[in-house]
Image 1 (spheres, rainbow, N blue to C red):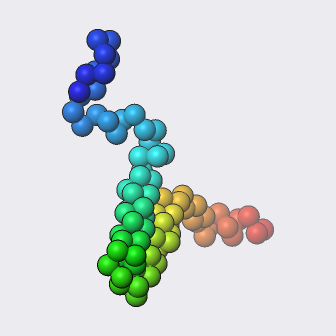
Image 2 (image 1 turned 45 degrees about the horizontal axis):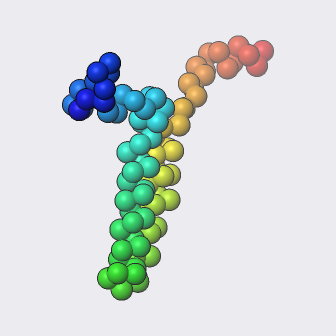
Length: 87
């Protein structure tokens, strides 16, 4: 896909426009948004209220999973260092 004479974007290079911090979050945001749309479709269009509510509960679960997987974890302090710090 050619934007103009000076710049071109090769096929599959569209994701590189986003910074890495957004790229790792994008699958979780997209999955949550699609779950929300599916929930609304079930609830209002298909008149499946229970299924719509159930699928709607997936959104915070997907976002929580993304937060859990992407949040940094502190390095454990070795026992020897902890004991030395106490004395």
